[in-house]
Image (cartoon, rainbow, N blue to C red; front, side):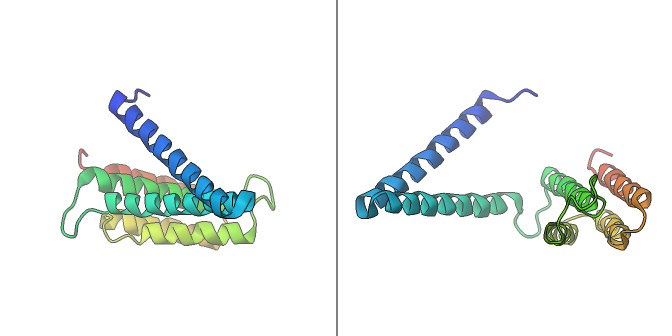
Length: 162
């Protein structure tokens, strides 16, 4: 996969800025509380950077109301497929008992929230709901795989170029 020099530079600068903010938090904490303060300062600044990145990415992903951008919606539809597939993997793990109930519930919650996004094409939401229903039954692994495959084909068919 080729990555443009501009993208590389953006990632590098972002990483440098994150490291500087965390190091600054550690230094600030060290001045006021020694090594324990440094750990608290670094941890607090890390959480701040993480939350800032999370909320910034949400703003960048969600288009303004009434505006439909094809590539953003296609990306969100792809994420729906991934979320549903991860939930399927939690319900039908490769190793019996390999996924805890807590993790399975978390993946289920994420998959349902992704599938309910209003900006998705109706066909994708309906297909995702069908796949989630089959997975929730937890009875037939092959039927669940078929439902997830149908979801991915629906997402592919909903792309603007097709």
